[in-house]
Length: 316
Image (cartoon, rainbow, N blue to C red; front, side, top):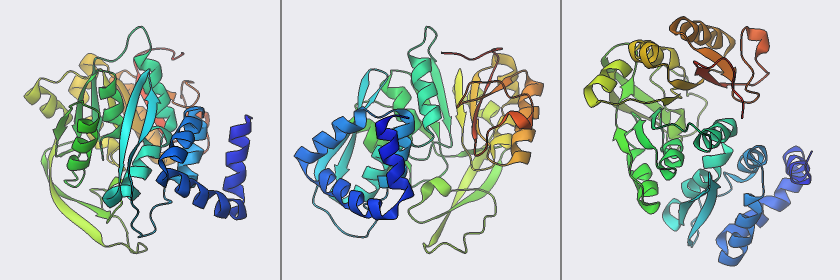
């Protein structure tokens, strides 16, 4: 275990330590000189360590207070720099985004970087369930043609702000994908757009107001044909609707066999998605170990991100 990892885990284990370090990190973020030093420290962290840093400090500005700041946080990814603006009126979201870009679902971000740096990088990326488009931003920074699919209307303007700040431009579709076409509503707790779901979800234990918007549902096959899109890397994170998205894109996936990254957290859901993708002709791999998943016993505890690929093995 690296020293950085040990110290971060120590913070996670003992609240008395966090009560000291969280105010110190907050103070450093607000001071330009200290923020620059903190940012340099952050660059030295591994993906896993960044995930711990995100868990410990990502929400430190969710205290309802106003802070005077006009700055940025720099991320290093696949030989490029990605800049996240930090502004007073949106600091709680800016800072949480800055740490989540590489720290949330870190195994997916590591896979992206490996693919981009490989001899056969993706040419076209489709980000299904894009939320604020941070996955899209990573691929756009590498010059990869990117399509972002997100039904929540509150997410688009923030993505456009990030893209404009980094002088890149993606293509955004404000709709949901499913097994068939139709209409639905997306619901989520205010300020938690990433929890948006089309299914009936019990948010009764949440303190925030629950927001709801009508959304249009199309199929992946239909969207691809209609817009002439040919993705060779697809990410699906649709809060339990992954299977419907895959079934709605079965023709394209069978024909082109793109790499498909998907989320599946529950055992039954994992088994169903594996069977569906196996029938299409794809093998399933862990994104943490790159080992092939052939049965439920191959899945590690708390593992929720996988990749379906036509390859027999995955290695970097």
